[in-house]
Length: 226
Image 1 (cartoon, rainbow, N blue to C red):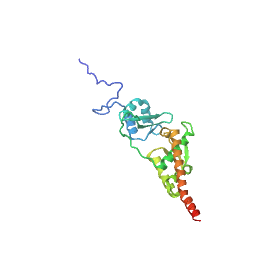
Image 2 (spheres, one colour):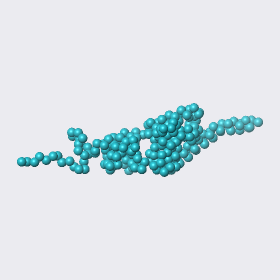
Image 3 (cartoon, rainbow, N blue to C red):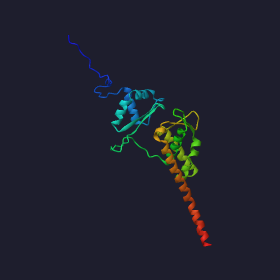
Image 4 (cartoon, rainbow, N blue to C red):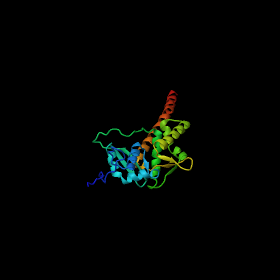
């Protein structure tokens, strides 16, 4: 009697999920890969199954992402993972991820939030008050040359973008207070924050001087007529 052998499955590979399936990742690792590609990030607390797949299959996921010029960023302390473009000057890398050009006010808010993160230890929650945040970036008004009503409107719109589109803040149980995502530590380092804030301060000072110059010029002209 001839024995009928079952098809051999490589222990390093997952059995096919459907007919003609050539993939080797587990079901949950595939879902994690899709979510990483869709973005913006995976959080351990909100998506524990996908997070567990990332931790257990990190090297395989990292290899798959490298195939499309993406780097996997994993922070086990804070519990999040996301992808970003590989940075390599010696290789011409195509644009894979969608990039949005931040508005001045978006950048100012994010820099302020990043600074708040820098005042705490990794793992600690950072909660900010929306009114305190709005006042702290008042210098943007000088750069954008906006009145109070226009500035407030732009600020509120920016907060919605940062919360809904970028997932970098989340509402708390207290109205007007938001929790800052620790992923900002990975997006802005301390030197970048300092450099950009200095540039905004310079632009604001230049704007103030430009507004004063016409008056000073008029005074000089009147004085010369006398």
